[in-house]
Image 1: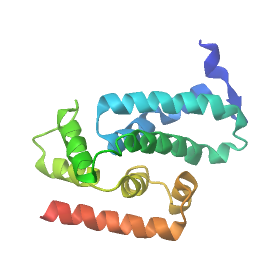
Image 2: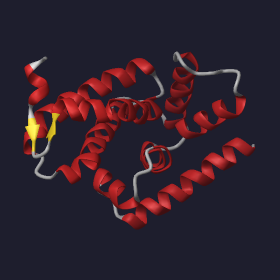
Image 3: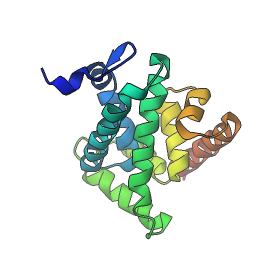
Length: 170
């Protein structure tokens, strides 16, 4: 067994974190960036940061929001590197990435419209929506992840739902 898998924080090893969060974080990241290859790269960076910081985590109870904060920040950092292109161009790029990624069922029109609507949200709205809708985090946990207030998150989630609904209906 790899010695690096035994880095500990109170009550948890890196191996346990990897086992518990690898799949959920992959899908969280994938929903943010669309591409399987990009999601895999970002997941790897996320776990490098988790490994490096695991010893400084003081409470096991804070683990879930902490790992999602790292993954979310890595996604936003990745997306911000494309700031030189407009939001419309970015949304088009992400939609193309979605359609060309393995595991995407192009014959399911409703699911594809939903995913494209999700990718058309701003990165901040997409973050709140995916953490709440897919990852089932409470607004308080999302506030820990994003550093935003609960009220701001509720408003962002509401607008994200409305945008998705309107995109699917039209």
